[in-house]
Length: 219
Image (cartoon, rainbow, N blue to C red):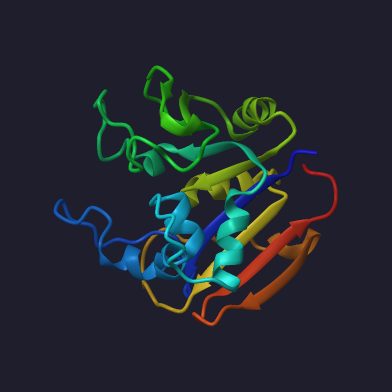
């Protein structure tokens, strides 16, 4: 049965985005702080950077990084995660991930901009879709063919799916840094944990991995 999944890194104060970007440094220094434990894993280096040397951390952080890619048949993301806010109307923009994105499945980008499907090396195909969360999920679930659907981000998109009760498995990696500002993940989600089994584990990096698993029927 298809399950709908989310994996996000957030700061101790609950922010899932950073605000120190510049034209010269489009991700900003804080993004590196927020994602350091994840991008240091052996799984990230192999899957995203194409590094097959075996370098990278193992253990708890790497276990969650590996789970991120397992059994996913389709992905949904917001326009900002794809980079359309930085490159509006640019037909040559193909996302942040180079010619071989790490997804290897159909990816549905929620946007008001009309664009043709964008096939990439490695099996990723970006589809650009103007749809509600439920409509997008129905399309992605069919494409997944029984595998899971991941809501990739950003946090605003994730909140929309969480508010509608469409997420079965939420994993947040709480990184021990304070950002002070950004897009908060938890806004408007009071009581989210009520219908979930909640578990947590702390990695040697200091990152606390918290999982919320919905056992009942999805809304």
